[in-house]
Image 1 (cartoon, rainbow over the protein chains, first blue to last red):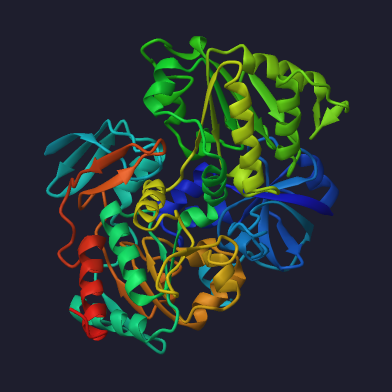
Image 2: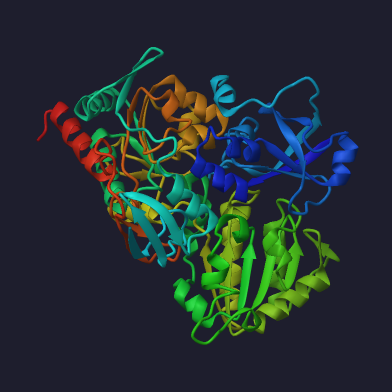
Length: 125
Length: 433
């Protein structure tokens, strides 16, 4: 399914920053993709299922969760962090700022995959 | 047990200055008035702490003296063709000042984290200026608040209670005295408590602001819906904004990180200018790291430019999109990096991270971070605002002096002291003073 990805801050993500980038809190927050329930049905995932997010820049597996803050259909949310960075383009449109929001992505169920911890994800780069 | 009052929080750009920190035997046991982020910071600042300087050889990391770590760092930087010095938003203005001096001495590049947060804001401010004020003025006078692309109930937890809809100001007291408008792609927690919620389509903020400007000028909008918002809602919002006595537009990365970027801010500045022909309106970016605004200020007063600086010509060159760190890393232009109080490995697109990995990497930071894990040299530092004093700029550009509340571990010096030693060693190696 095609979707628009936006990233941002969340409470869990902010607390995770203070507990460390290798903490369980940070992993649980930043490696999670919030979705509209209708989109979850369309893709065929439930909360906790694995989801592959892909752009022309790369792909990453994250955990699907029902949106805590209401999302319109076709829009997904992942907090800032190494997981979303795996699919973000380094192009900055002459501003210095990569597009961390409003990115076209392809999402699909990622059965049999795993959501890598930050250490392993970054070791692959 | 000791209680320190009037402590300023070193978490976000709000720099809340009413914290009461309880200390028992040099350990922080409570932080009264602190938000959830702040409390977590104060109670966990020793978690994942780096206590000894170290140098990595191959896969092996060896603890060394601070003197040896500084010497090795200076060697790396002096021997590099074009080092980049990055971070600077979670340290003091005193340290930031030394960072710019070091970049000039090395003929390197220096950028701060605003490059990946409100850089587009700063670019637009430099082009067009911006009407603003202090947060105190907002608290005392504003009767209409907008959060656009900003979700303070998840990012700046006390902003609303201290400065906007919940604040007890001199002339505006509490929630009933103010109207809250939220513009966002999502119906966020902040949107749920708004009087007016405008749900904009992703990447369409520029279009919505342009339509709103037309409505404010009472010109016809030749569409039924703009950016997913019915025109009648846009016209109603325009009347609401015109009708306020003192409006304040707070905005977040929803504007700077989505399509349009600095042009979204051009539109926002123009919108606020238009509103000022009908009423009083101000605008302010919601700054994230506690002293990212200070980094812009220090860079600006030292060089004339707020971020994305290149000293390789012997004088500062500012050209966002070229001299900004994500761009220059993606072009593999740097052969060494010094990272101060930041974690670009966890925050940059992977191509930029891969470029950092290819070359020598030095990290000065109190914490173990994703970046320090791969660093050739790690130098632990003291926390500004907890273990050492330092100046920081609040999001409204008011400078405040952060206090020291506990002693740092003896091996952790303030960034300022470490950078002064590093600058001295760089100059010695270069045959200077």
